[in-house]
Image 1 (cartoon, rainbow, N blue to C red):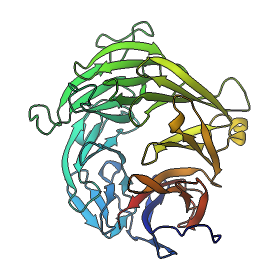
Image 2 (image 1 turned 45 degrees about the vertical axis):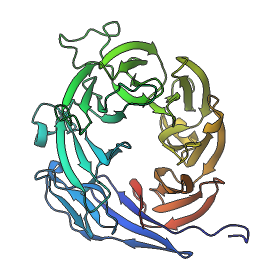
Image 3 (image 1 turned 120 degrees about the vertical axis):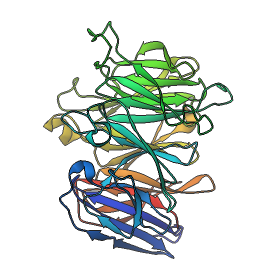
Length: 419
């Protein structure tokens, strides 16, 4: 550290590492210029079936792990981590104190046999998920296949939009609409519509339209247009849904993308994808900007030797962070820049501007942020292979420190903690 480099602010992190069967948690603390990584005490493997393994839903203010028993739905806050606990895929609802956890079901049938028998897989809703006051609300059976979630709400431009959670069901080719307004007792946390995404011009559909090959993966809401946008990977199209009527208003071509993200404020939707076919030795990532007001594609970019993994925004919405990994043939994977973090300037939208390609030395498992007064001070990256945390300056986008936390593992996640 040079004399002109400010000291790192204090922070606390939880670092999960595992092999997707068992795992461990370490608590990383930085105080007064000193950093310490302390493994959390673990409890041993049991003979629990996969469906009965406890779900890790968060960490408390006291840095205890919050676990949900899938059978009884009881929540416990413990100072030790069951090594077979599963860190559930979480979608926080920014408009409330609720978080939604996705259960994709078993690989063979796509069913959550514990909660839904043979009728599909599920989502679980918990309030205050990062607190010792965490409370289980409900588990809702939805469609089959991998799920994503998006939350819609009324805005100045779309005041009639009711608070609703939308869950995509990859295998069934449907979207499940669930009431998300506690003031509406008739619909709150109840299924209010199932939207079928099959297009008869693309395939021969079964009589009830389910399952189909639309393969929805990517759903975002824009408060500017008041519409929900669903990317249908199987068709290379996007369907626009009116959340007031839950009807598909229109569908347009949007080929070459595998996911959608909406920019802070909701004016622009960015599609991301990868071209593995044009060049036998190189994967080319694609970013495409769609303006919800003009309903036109307004910019696009090609990124050679990049495969985009996850996306994040900083606190004030001025930057987009894209983690990378490898994909494609052996030759394509050998050329992929899988160890870099891509940082984009969102202040120049609708133009795509790459600010920095930051070499992390290992692929990022996930990112977390230290924010203060609406600004991002630090960005943290969990680096699975190294068992380390990379600490990045939120203003200069420079790598400030690497913290060794655990042995390398196939999978890691990171969570910024209070205190």
